Amino acid sequence: METRKIQKVYKSKPVMEGAGVRLKRAIGFESKPLFDPFLLFDDFRSGNPADYINGFPWHPHRGIETITYVLRGDIEHGDSMKNRGVISPGDVQWMTAGSGIIHQEMPRGDADGVMHGFQLWANLPASHKMMNPRYREVKSTEIPVITFDGGVTIKIISGTVTGTQGPVRGIVTDPEYLDIMLPASSRYNHPTRKGYTVFAYMIEGSCSFCNQNTPCLYEEEGANYFDYERTPYSSNGTLVYFGDGDQIEATAENGPARFLLISGRPIREPVAWRGPIVMNTPDELRIAFQEYQNGTFIKHK
Image 1 (spheres, rainbow, N blue to C red):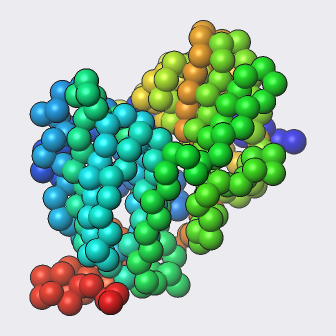
Image 2: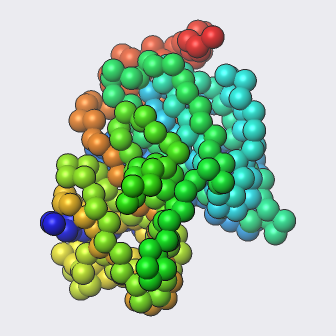
């Protein structure tokens, strides 16, 4: 088995989106095409309702999938397919925008005013850009949890671990989305598909990956990432991007650790991206915004 090596380590950066939501962004426009098929990854967590209460009012999407995973608080949502509901702690909303959807997401904190969740954008290939929109609301009770000897616990949102498959299936980029919890002093090796994009995002504690522990002492000027021949412990709010290989290794040595492990099959197509719409060519992008302005954006019945 060839263990993947760390290629880059990103520290999430503060940004403001929607109607004034303060969040941390680990993957964004400047990161493409490195994370293909993934376009964006946001971490929104705050104990101050003013940071998130204005939410994300009605806005369009086309050509992508948006995946929302909530740990604390709730998100009220609605869309042009007449879906309405609430994403609660442990729940996932996997929305395939396809040919076009208009929706809103309004965060509401828990009893302590805390909101914490993540949103991932996954691209769609040209053959699926204009597919019918599809919506999946996955409740926490539907997400399988497996525990290995030694106490390593994995929530499987999509993908398969030791024969147990997550509830989100039939996605064109064949993604794997895992929530992995490691007890202190534990190690976990996870198999990965060769040729797939793989990254980890730390959400609690810290851990080392792939037996790489000594940092190179330089940072590329103006970038939000660090290049390492070997990396130090990756801490909360850090994204680790791996090179190719058959597996990743994670070790929690300084206490319990928790991270999201996400992978997918690259699309390797041109990307024309502006705001919430991602197409293959500038002309397709122009048409999409033109249709949104003239009221012909929605194609589904």
